Image 1 (cartoon, rainbow, N blue to C red):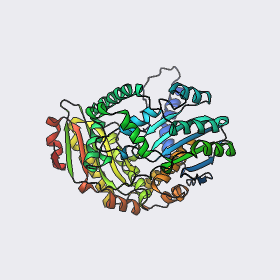
Image 2 (tube, rainbow, N blue to C red):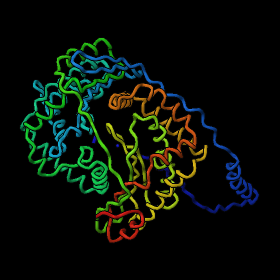
Image 3 (cartoon, rainbow, N blue to C red):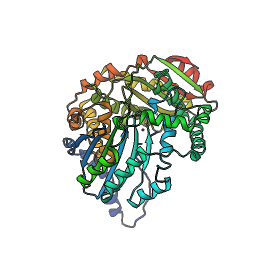
Length: 479
């Protein structure tokens, strides 16, 4: 869990001279070729149909006496099932001296249970036609995988065993810590990761959301007792929801859930998250001498998914920089050639979210890139988009939303999103209708109200000697 774009190829043009003994035929051919563009220009693309609303499959919801929540969804015709146990914990529950301790805990949970070795777990999942993984994120830990339908109850039991009975073998700790240090070293060599680290530190000072990478000393000092302590404090039924989605025997799945998870300790309630992001118009410059590109990450805190304006804000983000035909992409990629693949997003976590625009630009156009990004933000704040431009964005978002949720994993992802943020099913059921009803003036209001360019945090990783004078007009430079 530690969040792609199709690039259309340029048309290939060639010119050839054809010799022929029959001039009249040659003339007819040439006339025909010349007529094609004129004919094509008269053709209008088909008018897009009205986006279809998303239909959420029926969700069976109930809870076990110990507090484990259950979500069962019969979905699809393929004889497969996805089983995921989601525990509301992760990096947010680490202290300042425990960064990535949650990751180390998750890695050790994959090394076997009280009765099974890591190889046993892997082989059992493989015999079911799948695999079992543990993923650790900021707010959630996921345990599970996809298997053939006939093994749905067996997979539930295997997931339960991994979650409830991890063996935490001491012999695996040195290897996992070495691997963790290698991953940190690789990440720290990448300008994009350095930009994210600084951006989060500035937005969330002293908060878990602002801690991205551990120090070498911290990782080297982690002990098995710390891992076990993190698990004991944060893993339990009160924080857990199991999702079973696909084709499966409902009665068998329910029985397996009861026997494998019903005896789990209730444990503590999910940690409350209180966060007040900080932002101001300033440029945080990370020097990378000799770099031929500058990595730009700029953004500002925005509203969370629980707010009514969240979906309109998603549309605004998509129009600005969230898809290939967005304004920022059309400007600095297509028109100016400053960058290959800029992108923007609304990044969410429990209790907080932010808008962020990213771009890797050629060093000598770092300043002009900032100018054009701010130009597009300001333009949208001053005048609404055309109805045609907005309709294209709405059609894109409605289509991708339905496609993203046309899989077992997609449905689990959306349901766990609802559960994490305390949203009702209406968020999904009304998604397409909500964005379809938006007007150009709605989008202009979103840009003016939430995309606060005057207080935008900017991080740039690049060659200081080359870009300092370029970027200075756009904010106070902090080095």
